[in-house]
Image 1 (cartoon, rainbow, N blue to C red):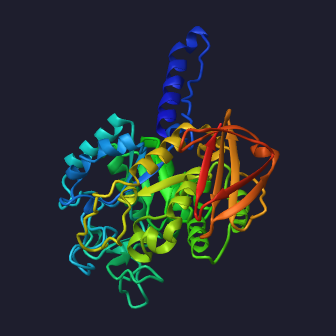
Image 2: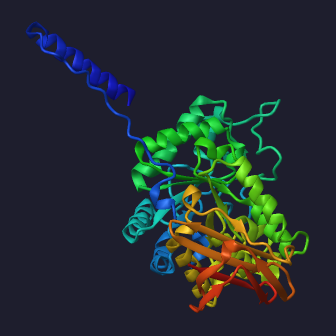
Length: 458
């Protein structure tokens, strides 16, 4: 943009010289900066779906996944976050197939998954359907036979004897740490991010262990990427610093761990208030938090939803869709994924169980249609409804632009009878899941089964 301004100004000066003898006024031309809306408008009521290409189908290819996209569109999915699609390093790899996060080439498609043309077809199809695609990006480290190892060995972090090291504090022996003190690395990495926007028209990136890469790199990257195409950026990090300028959304790790702890009886519903107080204090008002009950890391390393949450999974799914933030669905979650997927081997998702598909379809519809549940400052603030069972029952209302949602959750493993008291929830509603009309006064006696929930809309 600076170069454009210089050219325009030079032309203006030249014009002034040519007409100056006629004493005609010359207006100095100034190129106006185009202000990019952040976050982007299409993200305001969006949800996000994590795509594990390797495990999604028996073929484990992009082309095979494309056949599932109409189902996801019908289900109501907005953003497809595609786990890394790059070639995987063979040197020092774990298992027979290796980790997606041990990248061998940042500017190529893993031939096991398909071709660049396959990826373009997937992105084009998503755009035709009104969905968006973000790629999983691994900036902190590479595999041991990444092309940079030979072409730019100076890009890597080395110990006191000069050997390349793995990321500090990890057991990621299949990866080599990158050194962001090197300006050449920064330029290369930003160029590689641009490559996928320019060549595949992707809509942004989910950035792996973003907090292990300097924030000023991400801020520069975001500015440069937006100059090519306005993007949506998700940081795999739970801190507030990255969403000041670089990223639109970060992980709700604290919320996720809290839900696990409540499910396991270690904490209770009252602890959710402290979480929201922290979010309101620490995070920018318009920063998005990604809410989830599972993802690829949790599923493979810490257990399935059933293992971690038992019978509480659906109640916490409701909470992730109705709380401030953007809800995530991981591949197979809608099919009741009940096994830990192998991370370094082929382990196809079983799609035979469709029992949860209607449940998640309804949640996705609620998220997209109810203005009180919009992301960021557009959505309504949580107003908790007091009860005489505050440790067990979490009830709240959110309201924005004429829409209102009332959520009542029994966050315990026992049936509960309780009384809600507040003018904040009084009024006429429709039970979202069964369609019945209901009217609530400022004091209501209610009951819910263990891990039961109710959602009402107005």
